[in-house]
Image (cartoon, rainbow, N blue to C red; front, side):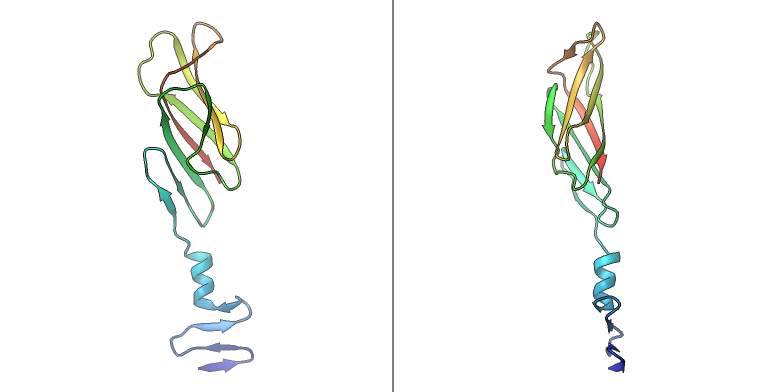
Length: 130
């Protein structure tokens, strides 16, 4: 070992000092080597652990309500994008959605023949946040 003040270098090259609160190898691993995590199911999520950016996705067999994300966003949900998953005839114009909270979103389909929300149509959704 090589000592300099309160810091020292081990035989394997690892350095211990107060600047990084212990061993340099541990500091680098904990702060720069964070692994991305994911649940890659049909309703799932993926998170970049170094930035906190998170994507979530899924499908709904019917719509017009508030639904849970597979995993709550730790900070906030920025947007929910929704689309129809099949031909829904002349009665449905579009699918829409928005975040309700960090753990829930609203999704529905809207009729093109008026302002009414058409229920029970399947859709796919995609959300981003951190």
